[in-house]
Amino acid sequence: MSVAGDLSRAIANTDFFTALRESALVYPVVMSLHLASIAVFGGLILMTDLRILGIAMRSVSIADIVRQTLPWKRLGFVIMVTCGVLLAGAKLDTYYDNPYFQTKLILLALVAVHAIYFHGRVYGKPEELDRAPAMPPMAKTAATLSLVLWLGIMSMGRLIAYYERPGQYPHAPKSAAEAVPQK
Amino acid sequence: MFLAYDPATNPLNNTQWAFPFFECIHIAMFAMSVGTIAMVDFRMLGIGMRHQTPAQLLKDTSLWTLAGLIVVVTSGMVIWTTDPLRYYYNWAFRYKIIALVAAIIYNYTIHRTVARSAMSATFGTALTATFSLLIWISIVFAGLFYAFT
Image (cartoon, rainbow over all chains, first blue to last red; front, side, top):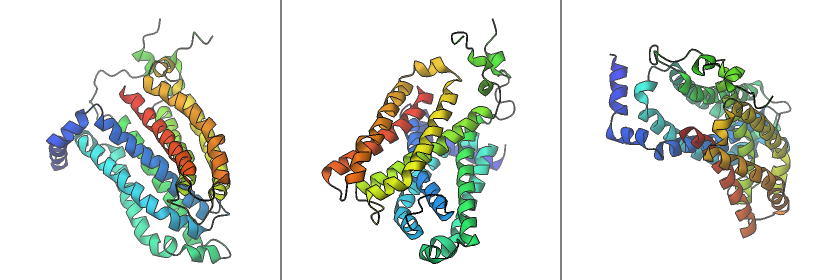
């Protein structure tokens, strides 16, 4: 057994995470909050990027979109990450070697790199983008990468549930047709 | 013909990637529709986007809200075909469908009318926005609770 595996099992088996995982109400509520924050605040990220790309909400200035949605994105991010950490901790013993979970973590790290790199260059000076005669390639790149990264993170998050460790379910049916015997 | 429908023959139940693929589209598009509605709601509550009027935000987001709703409902129906009866007999799903119909009607009648005329955050405007946020978020909750009930 690996160090990562031992550590993950130790975390998932703490009283706190065991109670969370086994709660019929708290666990789905935390997951719903995770999704609801994606709905409300993920939507803001999406619209900001589409605005920078010149596709959506063009009668609102980029500065207005970026600056006015920022506190809400921050609040949403905190709720989303808090719920995400709780969900991951509760099932870390099965998540740590899940390739979708691992990809999600890598993409989240890339979001941090994206934020550090593009904050000063794009999102920190939206007024300059409004004044520019044409959208600078740097800003378009930032918005496109943001869309790709967040859609990737969302998809990987959903796919975590679909991974089966080899041999985890030795008797599982190979197809739906096999699962439901035909008459 | 409808009665003879067997979910086991549905391509979504026989292709590994198809079901999660539609789920991802479903999630991305409810983010777009609910996110744009929330933007208008935050403004109506006077807690965000205050440089714009609710009417201006509504006008600028309505196309995206509608596009999101169309895709989210379509992908939702595709997902539903994978096991229609299980969905039908599930209380969370029943709530979700009733609330969804109510929310869509509400969004295109009362909510839209109030958003268009609201200049400042009065009690009525705030109430309209709060109800909107709550009903849409409750639909997201119900979608998830389906899997747990």
